[in-house]
Length: 219
Image (cartoon, rainbow, N blue to C red; front, side):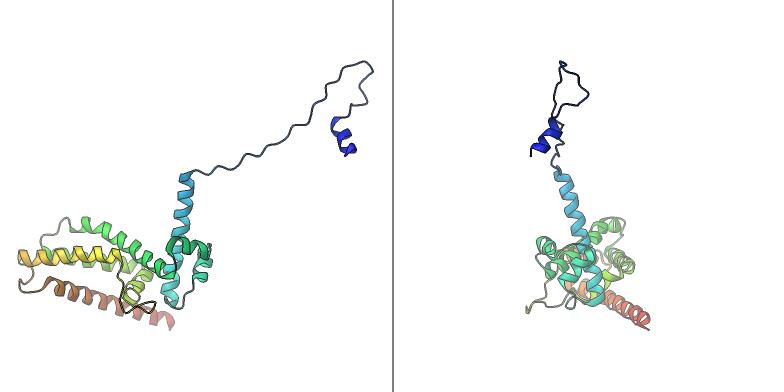
C-alpha cells in the first residue's frame, strides 16, 4: 500500500529545495449509468415481439403447430423462451397473435377495397380478391389460415377463432346482407350460409393450390 501511495503522491526528484510543489490526486473516471428512454424500451420490445411472430409463423408453417417447440421458435428469433412466455403466454398465444396480426393487415385494407363497390356482390368479389392476393404473397400465413386456424387444441372440444377473423367475418356478413337487400344476391338466401359457402369455395381453391405447390417442391 505504501508503494502505491508513493507512486501517486511522490514529489518529482527534479524539484529543487525550497520550491513549492502542489500535489494533486489523479483524476478519476466516472462511468455514468446508461439511461434507456421509454421509447427505446418500447422499440426493443416491439422488435423482439415481431421477431418471435415471424419465427413462429415460419416454423409453424414448415413443421406444423404440434411439432414446433417454443425453444426452437425462441432460438430462431434470437430470443428466449421466457420472452416468448412474457409476450404471448405460450405457443397457443403466439399462434393466435400471428393470426390476429395477419387479419389486422387484411382488415385495414378492406375499407379501401369496398369504397367503390357498386353492390353487395361486387363487394364480396373485391374481398375475395384481397384474400387471394394476400395469401398468394405470403404462403406461410396461407398455410396457417387454411390448415391450423380451425383446429381444436389443448384437449379442448371447441375451435377457437381469432379476434381478427371474427372482425373480418362481421364485414363479410354485412356485405352478403347488403347483396340481399340490393338484389345482387337472392333474397331467400341466409346471409350466414351464403358467406360460409363463398368463403368455403375460396378456401378450397387456395388449399388445393398450396398442397400442389408443396408437392412440387417435395418432388
